[in-house]
Structure formats: structure tokens, C-alpha cells
Length: 187
Image (cartoon, rainbow, N blue to C red; front, top):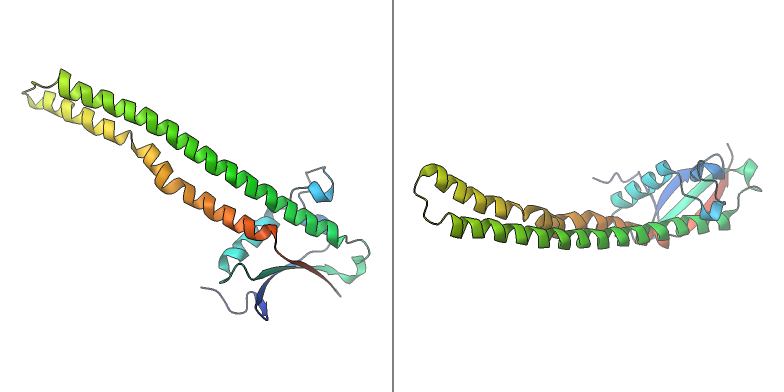
């Protein structure tokens, strides 16, 4: 349940408020790339994604980054905003790749599973068609069950595994264009 005071709402927009002491806190300090190409800090990204999930209308969201007033001259708002949008564009592309990979894996698994099912059913139907004992009958039925169980992985991939990737991609797509505002406050 969303707490009414957790996210500030002004007019029709919810704000995800982030308070940092310097702009380096927004970025992964292990990444040596310039700010506009640098990975965002994992905790910052996790906070923004979690906040976006909690807000009732995620398309009406703005990101507010607050800095101490004393470092206002150092902060390059345009570079930070561009870096945030670029990071989430890249994440959208990674999610699309994950989705394609998921379906490709599902296709390969389905082909293998159908071949395996065919072999199991063929052995069960033709090689063991005149079985009479309970042990042989158990083996015959077991082959059929094992063949059908082989379909579990592709069905899981096609029915369930892609939903979380799609949801993540939708959140990243919202963040690609999220309005970013900056404010400078007294400590």
C-alpha cells in the first residue's frame, strides 16, 4: 500500500526525491567513463525503480535530485540528466535483448523437447506395445510422462519467464524520458 506522504505530489506529478552530497554519488565510481557514459550507482537505480513501482501513476513521475547549495557551481545538471536518460536507454536495449534471448532459448528448448517426446512416445508405443507385467507397464507409462515433462522448460519460458523482463523494460522506458529537476538546499 502506498503511503500518502512517501512521495511528494505537485499538481498531477509524483516526485521521486533523491538527496546527494555530490554528483559522484549518482554514478558507479568503479566505472572510469565520463559522466555522460558512466553507469549509475546501483543503489540509486534500485531506489528509482522501487519508487516507480510504488507510485500509482508511473507515467506522471519526475525525478528531483537535491544537492547542497555550496556545490551548485560544480553540478552539471545537463550532463547528469543526459547520463540518466542514456543509462536507461541502454537498459531498455538490454531488456529487449533478454526478451529475444528468452524466446530463442524457448524455441530451441521446444524443438529438443518435441523430439525427445516423439522418441519417448515411439518407444512406448512400438517397442513396448505388448507389455503385460506391472514393471514393464510402469516403464512404458514412465517414458510417456518423461516425454511430456521435457516440455516443461519451453512452456515455462513461453508462458512465464518473459513477463518480468517485459515489466522491467516498461519501467526503463518510462525512465528514458523522465523529467529530471535539480534543486540546491542549505545543509
